[in-house]
Amino acid sequence: MMMSVDTDLFRVLADPLRLQIVTLLAKETLCATHLVEETGAKQTNISNHLKVLREAGVVETEPCGRFMYYRVRPEVIEAIAGQFADLARTARATAEANLKRACP
View (cartoon, rainbow, N blue to C red):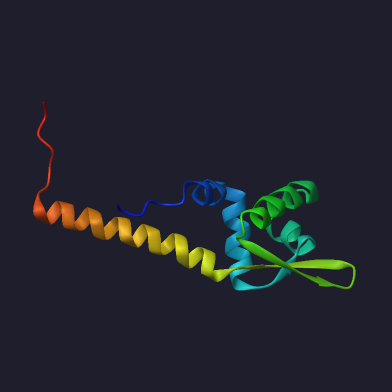
């Protein structure tokens, strides 16, 4: 059976603001205040998105004094990228073999 893309994780990353947060955190470990400054989003909105990303395992936290810093877990991004790469290889092989199901 072919591996399918993790739809829950894809849904989490499909949100434009969450994807922007992940992109920023891939470049630098930041706190919520930095993310508010970088995105222009409200603090509560950033906090809600960070909670979703944390619960999905995309980001991890590091307490630093009274602040909480966030960073991307690269293995999670690598896993979904690998799933898409597998899907692309399957699609290429299907196209090259000209596989198609006959209509009834």
